[in-house]
Image (cartoon, rainbow, N blue to C red; front, side):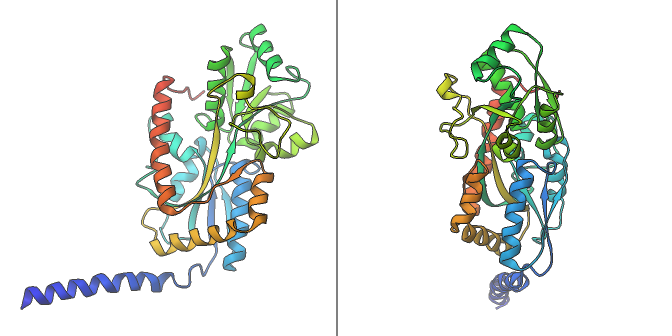
Length: 325
């Protein structure tokens, strides 16, 4: 009889545990949530993180506080979340650096697949090549001509070595056969500010990050690294239109929790974002920022992360690695 009793007891225990987990998360959240943005304030990660934080805060009646922890192309902030208590109160607003950095750096302090659990994608924003209005002419062709006529004198900033903006610059050099010097910063905002001040000449960034300066005329967009023109920037051509096939770079943004977070909490967070995505104002806000809304299930986002890790690993090997300078 003992084996039968043991089997029944195990079965009952397996049923009790899920109910216990549900009981613990029924009132989630009941205190402030910390949302880590692994880049400096003012950049695309920060701006969209605040949009999501505001949405979650209104839906849960709890403060959702964005905490900027920039450095090492996002590795510092992502490590904080990877090592956080998986109770749903420390989350990551992730960018493409989550899946890209392991291919770029010899060692990163987290595993993008094992140390996190996917909640949902939120948005995708393509890269834009921007310069000062008084530099390099008023078109992509004139900028390329300047680079070829002045070898070694063209430089470009990025939000950090090894990130999507940096790699967009590396690909641009390959496609145009010009040599540029990369100047990495600890976020998109300072990288853009130094273009306006004349410290650097150009950068690849998202419209979200450069919106104010583009709209004020302090910066000029020359080309968008996507298949189609952005609704927010209908007058700026794509690289493809200008004859540069394969110049497609962007940043995917999403909500991530530490590994071990209760499935009930993950589902709760996903449902809150899914509900928000049905609100035209939520989508319109992302489009106005120069992005596309992309909200999918935790399982779909998990698959995307795994596929993207493999994609970037293949890409970095193909171009022979990326310098951290």
